[in-house]
Image (tube, rainbow, N blue to C red; front, side, top):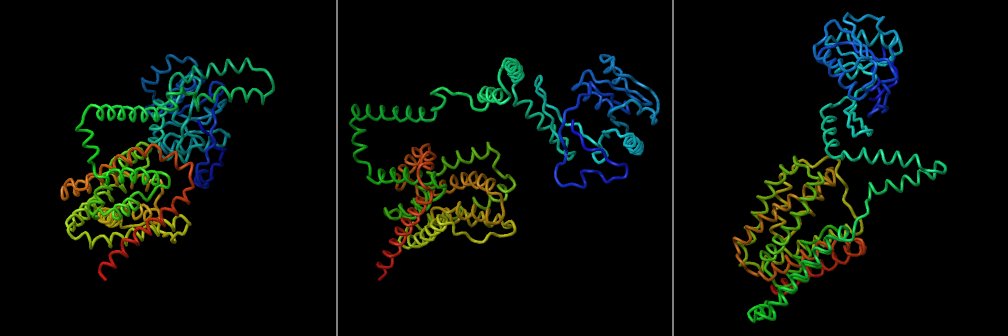
Length: 503
């Protein structure tokens, strides 16, 4: 239960004069007060049930002309609750401490509120927040633990939903913990400060329970076990299967180059949160891959990583589904179209390469700008053409090997969108874009340059659990500067080589 200061009869309701939630939460001992409930219909039954459920020894007097049978059934177990079957008059307020008005007569409720205030008493008027001095919150109870929830009278439905969530989330054993803490408290010696320190030490386990070695390192144990398994299988095949030896020896060295590149680029992306596409695209072009094959390799290797990232953002509630619905269809159309056009121009890759190189040169400059905090002026209003933004971002991402995050995420944030929800929405959208553009590339190109594709997939997958650790060890600014410079040099080299060929 929550209480507001007393108000004069002719005052504007207190909440309307103040900004924000001005309620002061308190817990009232109704078993020590004298309560008056006016009205004994369905509304009165609801109020009385709330009272006795939270305070079984509350002393309540009910005044009503008509009393529902359910009221009589309820009070049969509470002999301290009395009924006066009569019309309300001001004498009913004598020897009363707190009042609940639960009639279906709005005029009568306002009159009751007026005379109640004249007596200096607090009143709750059912379904009329503006007339209330206090509200009844939704209650979550686990034994002696009691939590009251209020939405400032704005939405009882939200309060009930939160009650449901807390009831399901808080274990029943929490009351046993509470009783044990009470018993421990009685045994403590020393001054107040010493007792607080001791109790804090005991309750620390509730927030950060001590975990065993396996529980603390489960992620690394899984990866070590997986790598050992793969290594053991590979060693066994190498020694028992001559065909396997021949296969590994004859693998195009391109696979190993892209295996290492995928690992390094995924580490960089994990450390600074960007640049996987632009670094991979620059490297792929430098290694002689046509732009379409390079983009296919990038997008196939990103399907799993973005799926995991999107799922995590979904579980954390970081996805703006309204924004997602507006963004996703145009983005997919743009990505598929970009992949189709780039694949169709595979025979003209020598002319497409310099275009992609100029684009990656530009993105390298963007990375340097971010490293030195050179920002554009932010817009004052939210970006309106979300669908067009998605289409352009999807098209450029597929056609040039990357840029979805750089274009769409930065535009949404600069346009006033919430950074966290923008990131979650962009990540989960990226999964679908990468999947469908990869499918388009694979349908158009088949298994060309599979060594590069497989190398990137394996390399980036192995790097993903290590990336988070790297981000805490190396300066993000240092990485961004290095990446920006390298990308610009590689891209500039491709442009210069194309110009020299023309000359």
